Image (cartoon, rainbow, N blue to C red; front, side, top):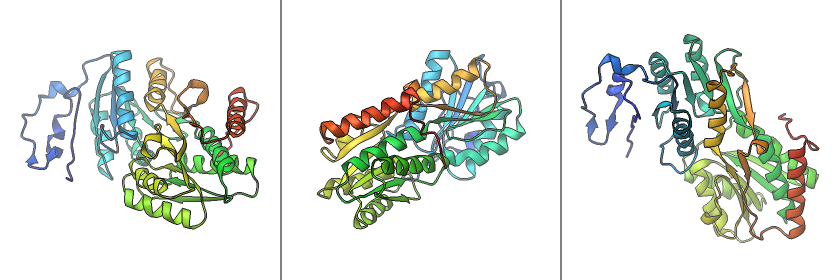
Length: 337
C-alpha cells in the first residue's frame, strides 16, 4: 500500500509528526509539548529499522531485541520502522536530539548515515547491527560471527551436492553477507576442493521475484544446493527450490523448513534479540568503546536447525564434529578475506 509509518513506544519526537503518512493522508494527532522530547528514564534506547516490526524476519527480530532491552533493563524505548534511503540519517539525528543513551541502526545499509550523525553527537552512543569496525569513540558495530554459520552451511552444501555445484544467495552485498559468502566457499572447499561455488546478490531484501530469478539462474548453472540469506526476498527462492526435484535449500534467520518440507537441509537460526541484548548490555555496563563487538555459537546467538534426516548419519556427524571444533577453538574460521 506504500504506507510509511512512524511508531513509538513513548512519545518523544514532536517534530516527526509531519512524516506520519497513511493510505488516507497525514496523521492529524496533536503534537506533544517540548517536555515530551526527552526520554523519561535513566537508560533509553532507540532503533531505526529497515522493514516493518511484523515482517517475521530481520526487522521484527530487531524490534524483539529492543523490547527485551526494555524488559530486562527497564529502559525507555522508541523506534522508527521501514526507514529507507536518505531519511534514515534524519531519524537518527532526531533520536540523538532527543538525548537517547543509545541509538541502534538495524541495518548494514545504515552505516554511512550512522557515521555522519555519530560525529555530530559525540555524547550519544550509536550501534550498527553489522560488522562495522567502529570509530573507537561512540559508534560501534554489533555483529554475529558470520563466518561460523557461513562455513558450516558450506560444509552442509558440499556434503549434500550431487552435481558438485552449490550456491550462496545474499539479499544485498554488505560486509556481513560477503563474510558469510566467503566462509561458505571455504567450508565447502574444505570438504571437496573441486566443488564449484556460485555467489550471487539479489539486490533487495524484499523482492521475491528477483530472488526467484537468481535461484533459477543458479539452478540452471548446475547448483543443486542453494544457501539463501535474503530475508523476505528469499522466500521466493525457497518457492523455486520447493518445485525443483533434486534441489535443496538452506534457510536463514529462522528455521524455514516449513516453507519447503523435505527440501530445506537446515537453516541458520539467528537469535537477533539476544545479539542486540548482548551489545546493549555493554553500553549499560559502561563498557562501550565504539568498536566491533562480535557474538557467535559460544554465546548461543546462532546455530543450525535440525537436519531432519536430510543428511545421512555420517554426514550429520561430520557437520557436528566441525561445529564442535569451531566451538573449542581447534578450527579457526574467523578469516574474512
